[in-house]
Amino acid sequence: MINQHPGDLSVLDHDGRRLLVGNDPVRLAMAAGRTSTRTSCFVVDGTKDGGAVLCMGPPVAVEGRQATPGDAWQQELYQKTVSDRPCLEWTVRAFAAGRLALAGGTHQDGSPIVLVDGHPTPLGGRRLG
Image 1 (cartoon, one colour):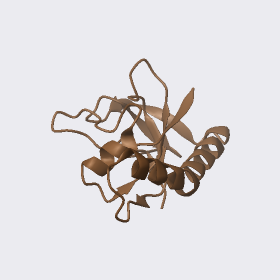
Image 2 (cartoon, rainbow, N blue to C red):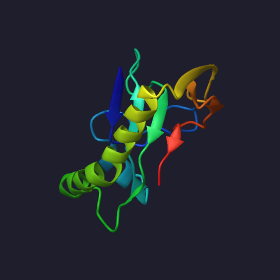
Image 3 (tube, rainbow, N blue to C red):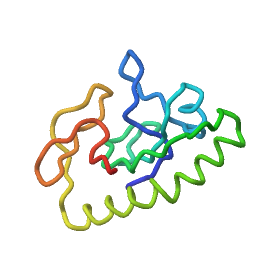
Image 4 (cartoon, rainbow, N blue to C red):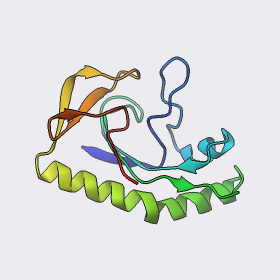
């Protein structure tokens, strides 16, 4: 199963754990001072937002929005058109065409390495934009 997440699942802490997981990753990114947010499409596994990341949508500039619930919601709504859709479209098309596979190795966070057209990708998979 493939899921879409409104946070950049390639952002890790110093111990190699994903930082932008859970229900409010856009606000978390903004509170951490990130200048953009982006959508991730990933393979669902037994972890919380920890599966192999297949694709990441284009980055969406924060443009002065603050890490308040209202501003974060506005950022996420804008992100849905700019980042969610391209990310999901690319992922579904690549999956349907048989272009995606998982390699035997893992990234620093323990997630499987994604292959696109037989080539390994960095953590975050195919990055659009």
